Structure formats: structure tokens, C-alpha cells
Image (cartoon, rainbow, N blue to C red; front, side, top):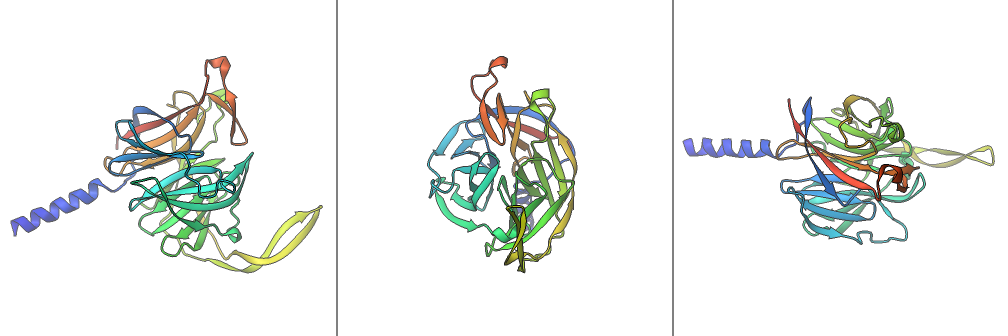
Length: 313
């Protein structure tokens, strides 16, 4: 009986040690330079970092152990990764063709965490109203994958992991400006918002919203509306059948970055609950695209860094 009880305790402790949980307060532990500028996902052993057109794998000491510099199956129609997440040994990546503030050919591409090789795609639903994908987050409890939209950050969009079908969308109230990455744990969604102003050294922020109740409304028959030559044109088609409202509050101001710049993805380490945030500094960004280094400040290139925060309480 004692052996059974001991085994039960070991299993529970092991599960607790490998599940992400939010804290209320964090302090900066270390900063780790990386090659990617877009997103971060974490499992028990590795950091996975997305660049605009690449995937990287690092051990937690900061050593690169693997990279995939040609990750797109069809580079002629997709040229951009956003923030990423990992679940059951698979890396979920939002992909699109992105040019000067617009996204096309949106999809969720799934990659093998061991090899960084492509496995499959989850198709985007145009009827949802989403026009860009800046980040991916897995709701491990509800078995859903969510996508954020940098162009119009009023909504995030949820899909079923089991079927790959569009489920619902959440209106962000108030809307985070230029949402770059999302992460879900403890029934909450974190939003990394590029809402500061690097020119004036005003910090970006992370926001939080409750995600405990998510009814799946799906699609319905309706009309798509667009302005063509200053006239409203209505086209029959599938549209979102409903949405939920998410109340956003400030989670953390990122005033301890080495220099304000462009906040990107974020994640929580399943082993120690570290909050890890990717930030870029040293270049001027216009409509989501780098315009070259800030030479007046001594920069010769953009610098990408993971800011690793330990949970205080």
C-alpha cells in the first residue's frame, strides 16, 4: 500500500511540475540571444523559436541544437511565421504571405518537434473574418487552437484540435493594439501587444483575459460585405455564427527590456513556470517590417532576445 501511495504522489508531483501555471508577479532572471524574431514555444527540454522564415531549436542553456531554414511547403504562397506553440510533441505555427501590413493564404502548419519537419496543415476559415495571423496558442484543457490577428486585433479565432474546424471567435475588449503573440493556461489568455512606442522609449505590454467559457458557434449562411468603387457589395457565403466577449486587463508592462522595440511571442515553461517573452530591438519597424538598423544608437542589425522571468508569487 505504501508503494502504491508513493507512486501516486510521484505521478502527481511529476504532472504538476510539467504544467504551466500563471503567477501574479515576475522578476527578470536572464536574457538569452536567439536567431529568430517571431515566436517562442517551450517543452520540458527545449526552447523553439520561430523566425520570419525559419524554425530554431535551443536547449535551455542557450545552445542551438537544430534549425530548419526551408520550412514552407509552398514558399510561393507563404513567406511568414508568427508566434508559435507546442503540444504533444508538435509545433503549431501560424503561416501566411505577409507584405506591408496585410496577410494572405493563412493556415496553421504543424511541425514535428524532434525534427522540425512539416507534418500537416489546418486550414483557415475565411468566413471567420480573420485577415492575418500573428500568433498561435493551444488551449490544452479545451483542445483548441487559437489564432491572433495583428492587422485587426479586435478578435482572436478558435478552432477545434480534433477536427480542425472553425469554432468561434472572441472579441477583445478593449482591443490590444498590434497583437503579436498569445498563450493560454489556467483558463486565461495572455496577449503580447506591440502598443508601446520605441521612438520615445515607451514600453510594450502584456494583457490577460478569462477564457473559461467558450461555446462553439461555428458558421452560418449569410452575406459578406465589401466596398467596391465606393459602393457596398453583398456576396452570399458562410459567416461567423457568433462570438464571445473577452475582458482584457493589464498583466505586465515590459519596462525592463534592454531597449523598447517590438515585443513578439510569449510562453510559459512547463517545468518551472518561467514566463518567456521574445523582444526585438535595434531597428525601425514600419507596418510590421524592418526598415534597417538604428545606426544613430550604434546598432548594425536587429537583435532578438528571450527575456526569461521567474515567478515571484
